[in-house]
Structure formats: C-alpha cells, structure tokens
Amino acid sequence: MKENLLNNVRKRVMVWMALASMATFLSAQTYRLSGCVQDENRQPVEVANVLLKQAKDSTYITGMLTDTQGCFSFDQPLGEYLLHITLIGSEDLYVPVVLQGNKNVGELTLKSSSALLDEVTVTAARPVIKRLVDRVVFDAHNTIASAGGSALDLLREVPGLQVGQNSIGIIGKGGIKVYI
Image 1: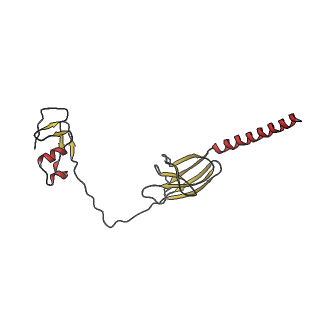
Image 2 (image 1 turned 120 degrees about the vertical axis):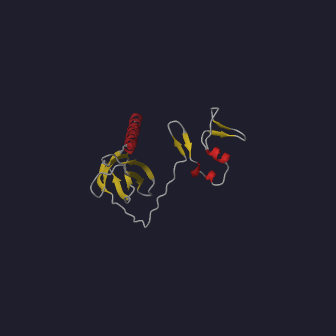
Image 3 (image 1 turned 45 degrees about the vertical axis):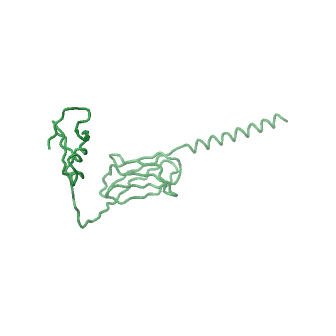
C-alpha cells in the first residue's frame, strides 16, 4: 500500500515537473515579426526607423533600421506590440500587431509629409581653423575674443598654443614664429 501511494506521488511530481518545464520552454520561445517599408511610389525605404513598443503603454522594447530592400525583422515572444515607423520627411506610421507565431506584416507604406516654409535663411561662417599642407591657419574674425579682446586673448584661443604672461609657445615644441 505504501508503495502504491509512493508511486502515485512520484507520478504526480513527474507530471507537474513536465508541465512546468513545458511552460518554461514555451515562454522562452520567440517568433519572427517581419515586414518591409516602402514609399508612396512603392520604392523600398532604406534606413527608416522601426521601433517595437508594448501595445498597452507604448514602452520601447527594441528598434532597428530597415535594410537596403526596406525590410526589417524582430525575434520576440508572443504578445501584443505596436510598430512605430519613422523617417524624416514622412508621416509616422503606427501598426498594431498581435504576435501569435511567425508573422509578416507585409508592405507598409509611408506617406510623405510636406511643410511649406514662408522664408528660409541660410547662414554660414568660415571655419576658425584651416589646416594647410605646411601650416595651420587660425582665422581671428570668427572668434568671440576678436570682438573686444586683446591679442593675447586671441592667442589663447588658438589650439596647440601655450600662452603665458610673457611667453608664447607651442605645446611640446620650442622656437616658433607667430605672424600677425
């Protein structure tokens, strides 16, 4: 009688262990979520941002850029997700996805967004430092120190120069010429 009871307990423990290991195996299994992004002309969109978020609260999970064919793929466990696809010059695209196995969402089309500007002003400044073959040129016109500072203030801005109270030197070298 004790042996039957002991065998019964062993069988039940084995069944519960098998069920627990199956649940662990199934929860660790991932499935492929894939698709491709195209523009309104049905051309693949390279380097679009594809973000995978939790559907319930839009929490970021992972993200990637589309490849040269405009395609992406994620390996994720079962669940409800939100694909968020962005590209500069296009409207953001949101696609809810329920992942119950491998899933291809197909071709997703981004719509272009246009914003008309009344006026555009383009400004540019020359670089402060220009590296030539035989020398480095520092353009003092493009520095803040040129608007009211002394010559020593300007020289303190030059990279690689060491300016003291009564001396000017190049860091790591001696005997320099300064042309003003």
